[in-house]
Image (cartoon, rainbow, N blue to C red; front, side, top):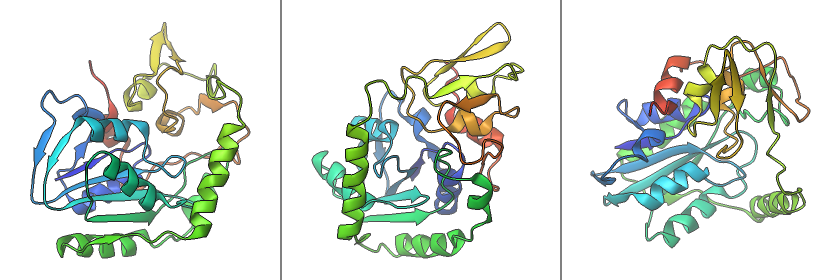
Length: 255
């Protein structure tokens, strides 16, 4: 049994290599009885600021997992900042003792820091690393990815940077331009229902935004723009093995 959260397809692709019938956390979090029983239960998700997204943590807090082998695969694009150690501590605080936590280097979709064309051109050995991870899990290996002092320093640096940001720094993160054609894709890929339609134009509400960037990468007209400088405003990303329909299916909050 594998649960996943995805914004641009990376974690969904990884999850599908472990279990073709993987389950979207954006949907599972609404289960009336979130009790799960399996020989092995895994969670595959990206890291935001070196930690699991708020949506994923909320799901883990709500759910009950009955399994002798709980594992996490954390996807990242540049530096993981000791993500495995941070995840292990989070799980321990919730009374969960993971057997396996690993990190997986993939494309980084954070537009202010990375040019998507350059990211896509890099060979990050994703499938090679995924094969190793799949073999580890099949064999029931017990392993927590090692963390260095340099990793911990990177996370401290990030936290210091966040602490200096003004309150409400992310309230005006995005804007929807006149290029919007009202296709509603943004309303369907957002896992937190942050977009509504007013007339034939999409409107973004920051209240529950988790900054996953599913919306800005999925917009076919590039009508969603950041109010921060981007490395390449004309480049967007979706994992080449995942369709936009799969991301919609994963995240669309139909209710």
